Length: 321
Ligand SMILES: [Fe+2]
Image (cartoon, rainbow, N blue to C red):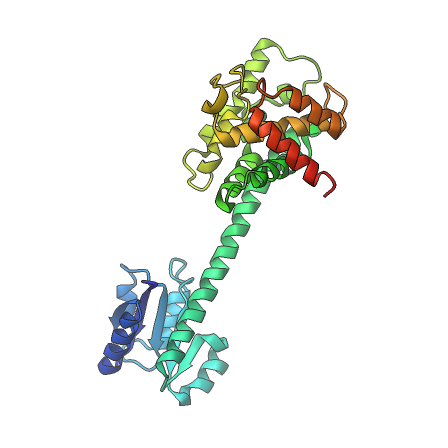
């Protein structure tokens, strides 16, 4: 039972009632309007998942309704299916430039109608989902690139840290949703650096105590930046706690052991592994083997020893990928 809402616009009351009964029987919610004008009034208050409209109706016909719906930004994404008599079919195709899934010819069989509705709903959902995913990834990429651009020697860092974090999460057999959360956190982990002054980010020598404390604020600023964006909130544990240390000597809260959120304990290893294996202004790049040994030596100090084991195992498996 989908429970999606269908608005039927049909002036033949018997036909409308029959359609309503059938569609409710198969699990849809249905509202009726007897012409285009009434449908538009109804659309002030309800947002159906699909509109089924007859063409020839008094007051406002199906074409006029279609054009009114398409001209309103808040309504124009609602899929629209014409219910047409056979004689009108040619007119629709020629005059309105509609696709084959935009109309269904009377008399229709129940299965035919249901299939047409399902196809239309699914196509609309697929398009919306794809657009959303695209917009979402684009936004994150813009943010990540904005951060990297200010901190020249971290180019590619975001992508690598994400892939090492995901590698560890997969080795821990986390489900796809949790892996996605870790990936999101890894992409956004240093988002708060947007508020750290460039002179500090790119300073070649040692930072002063004031500069260190300024730099450290990126964890809490980052968490603050995403707190009101529901789809980014799952990234918060990583953004806020990726500089905590297992021995309690990290920041911002000095959490220790398993008080540090799991995702942050994972990402911290990925973050340092990448820092060690890439050239920074303050050190030469280590070989992956040297970096793995360094991380193993930090088990129980900087890092959760159980996750270090997982990381080493995963690295051995995937290093040649
Ligand atoms: Fe950081």
